[in-house]
Amino acid sequence: MMQLLAQGWGPEKVMDRYLRYARELVDAGVTFRAMKPADKPEAWSLISRHVTMPSEWKIAKHEGGILAHDPGGKLIGALLMNGMSFDGPQGPQLMASIRSVVVDPGWRGRGVGVVTLGMADRPFHPQRPSFYLGNCAEADARFYQRLGYTVLQPGAEFPLPLGAETIKVNITNPDYPCFFFQEQDH
View 1 (cartoon, rainbow, N blue to C red):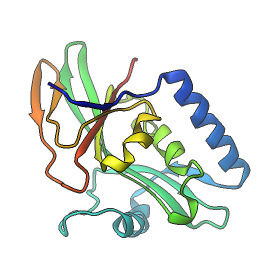
View 2 (cartoon, rainbow, N blue to C red):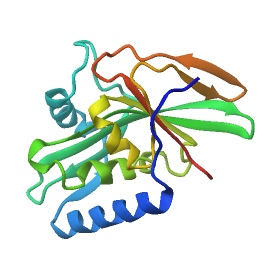
View 3 (cartoon, one colour):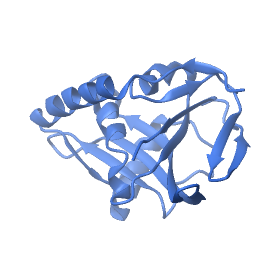
């Protein structure tokens, strides 16, 4: 049984918030774009300064995401994610694994994380993921909940639907013990 910490906001409320922040940031000169292979060292530098992770953890070749730059071109935010395909009941499906959402401390609270996570489907065009999954600190649960994600209690086992099968997943990083997830309607 899933132990719910927070139910996600509805799509209209999430979209209104996303658009408000996106307009404000773009008007202030912030730019957002998909991560390119050449961007990975800079993204890794930002992520590794702000995310607790095992020493062997790195950005893999198949991972990408969204980057945010301030008006002067400095990297101020990064969403790192990867995709996994599987055969679902209606054919091939794609799941996005959100590895990290990082915002430079000087830009926190201004919507950079909201906009980067709101653009999470961009690297996957034209096939958009049908499911998004990640894990976070309990203190960050409200951030994900306000973006429409359902957040589970710390340590709750997650029944991950992979097509006709469901596997039970546990979190092994004690610094980020809560699963967050969202299913997309296509």
